[in-house]
Length: 80
Image 1 (cartoon, rainbow, N blue to C red):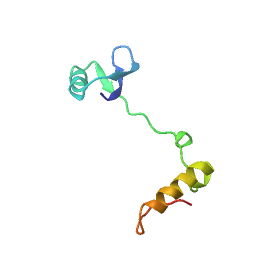
Image 2 (image 1 turned 45 degrees about the vertical axis):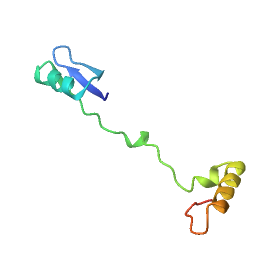
Image 3 (image 1 turned 60 degrees about the vertical axis):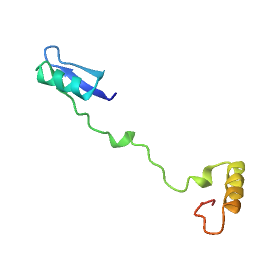
Image 4 (image 1 turned 90 degrees about the horizontal axis):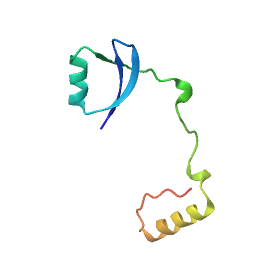
């Protein structure tokens, strides 16, 4: 089930509710709750620059090389 951030209007408290969309819609239509849309802080976004394969262990790259070698001529396995 999805998790919604809902504000209880009488108290002003914002809580997470794990409910079905139908239950969430009922809560909103009762007038006691409002949905809260939180903004994303760009400092909290996880990103990666560069190839991930270069940061893996040698054993893993060797295993991928063996898989690539045994998979046929027109394979698309990237092992660099």
